[in-house]
Structure formats: C-alpha cells, structure tokens
Image (cartoon, rainbow, N blue to C red):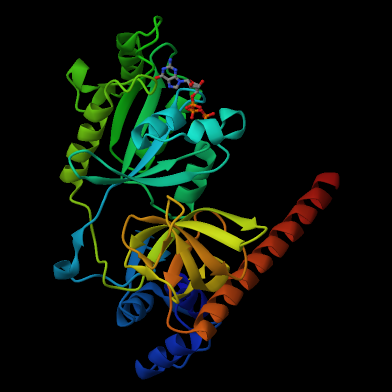
Length: 370
Ligand code: GTP
Ligand code: MG
C-alpha cells in the first residue's frame, strides 16, 4: 500500500489519533481518522511529531520508529546486547552460566532453557555486557519479524565434539539476515572427542570464514565446563562492541523490547524488558503492544528492586494491565488516557485482522469444496 490510514499512523507513532488529526488540520488538511494519507504527508506528520519513518520501498510505509530522533550530542555509550545462539545442547546456557559464574543450568527443569534469560555481566576489565539466552530461534525470528532489533552481537555456540547442526545453520542465517556481527564460540574443547578444526571447516561450507582460517569472523575455543577461553571470548565481545560504537540517550522517555512475559501468580503480569533507549523509571506510564500500565516496580537480573533502568539493561517490569508478547515494543507515554487509547486501538486492529483471516479461511474452504 502506498498510503497509510490516519489512525494507523497515530498508532505506529504511539500518539493520539486526535492529536494527529489536529496536526493535519494545521497543515490545512481536513481528514478523519479513517482516511488515508500518501507517504509524503505521512512523513511530514511523522517529522512533526519528532519521529522517524522507515520506508521499506518507495511505495510502502512499513514502519514508524516510535522514538523521536535523538540529538547526537545527547547520545552516550551503551553496553552491547549479546544473544547466544546455537544447536540444542551445544552449551549455550552453560556458557552463559560460566560467564556469570552462577548456576542457571542446575535450576532449570531438565537442563533445557524454559525462557529467555537476560543478564548483565561486568568483565574483569570493567566492560558491561548484556546477554540474552534464547530458548530457540523461533523466538528470535518472531521478535525480528516484529521489528524488535534487540541484539547487537550473536555468539554462535558450536560443540567441538559435534558438528554444525540444523539449528547452527538457522542461527547463522538469522545473524546474516539481521546483519548482526557474529562471534563463533567453539565449546566443549575439554572433551576428548573435540575437534575444533572440523567445526571451522564445516562453518566454511556455510560461508563463515573464521579468523583461524584467515577470515574476519572471530572464533574462540572455549569450555563452559573448565572455564577455558572465557576471558578471551569476553575480550572478543568487547572488541566487537567497540567497533560498533553503540550509543543511546539515557535522558529521555524509555523505549524497550519485551524479551519474555508471563502471568505470575503473586505478582500479576510481569514482562522482562530490554531497555533500548531512554531510562525507564518507577511510576512511568507506558504502552506495550496491546497492553499498558504504570511501572509499579522494576526488578533487575539479580532479583533486586531498582528505581530505574537505562539503555541495554534488562529489567522485569511490574504494573501491567495484561500480559504482552515477546517482541512487543514498550513506549513510555505522557498520560494513562493516551496509553489506554493506543493499547485499545491496537487490540481492536488485531481483533479485526483475526476476524478477516477467519473469514478468509472459510471462503477458501468453501471454494475448495466447490
Ligand atoms: P538447550 O537450552 O537445551 O538448547 O541447550 P544448551 O545449548 O543451553 O546446552 P546446555 O548448556 O544445557 O548444555 C548441554 C549439556 O552439555 C549439559 O549436560 C552440559 O553440562 C554440557 N556442556 C556444556 N558445555 C560443556 C563443556 O564446555 N564441556 C563439557 N564437557 N560439557 C559441556
Ligand atoms: Mg539452554
């Protein structure tokens, strides 16, 4: 579509429809919320509200980045966000666990990751790194397809006593598609059957040329069990992060991405949110996907209550009216009325979409029978 509905545009900017209509009136355009705008008009409005528009093609207004553009002078360095990916049992959780020097694996049912953990680690040299441990690539894909670009660096874990496996290849493809730099961690090198060079050769077949093979993808031999190579891995991450020059503006209304969310018996809906820009504070009013709320409490990765969370910090958010979905974007807004309006608008739209899909299916079934 080369046009966007006024109400849809407002929703994407997390602004009230009435304010957008008002703004259009000022520009001399009398429109209702159900009328469509051409891209150029949409872009003017987006800029008027201090947002930034992304065009997927010349004719498609694909997305409006919710956040206002930051003045470069307000940007400060932020920690890198690292996602650990790889085939089942290749040691993703163990590796993160070893890095954190705590025991996540021991606490997990069957040793299989049940959720996406998000943790911050400070290296010996003082660099702060934010890690995400994924339960599977489906979550990553769904987050990416919904526009949540949460990760800066992918650590591809491959077990040295095994091979490049289907989920290794998937992870490679995801990293490539997301244009995220990758560091290869060849794990389990303590095992007698370990053969790191075999892994490197196999990676070559997937166009991953590691440094040891004269390529430019960093590769590190590690053992989550013995701790071998971990410092080197952290150093590689720090080098990669420096190249990326990651920055954010901590002094603005927060924007973040939901890493996981669930309904907690005692605490109500709880979402783990990775703050991507700004600082989320207790008492902030926000909209997140089709839900909204007011921050009642923030809990960090060590289970401690904190008053605020800045860029690249993963934090549990309490005070939601419902449970959002992984990949949903959180935006702090000015008023509760605004938050409610946007959340309701979004849930109406998705209800309509579901209804349309349902009707479509029926029609198809009817046609198939005919
Ligand atoms: P999923 O979350 O199920 O995809 O697995 P994972 O990749 O997180 O693997 P996990 O960390 O649960 O490790 C799988 C098994 O490999 C466990 O039994 C670990 O103890 C073992 N393991 C992990 N890293 C190492 C290592 O460096 N050396 C040895 N010998 N065993 C390891
Ligand atoms: Mg795991």
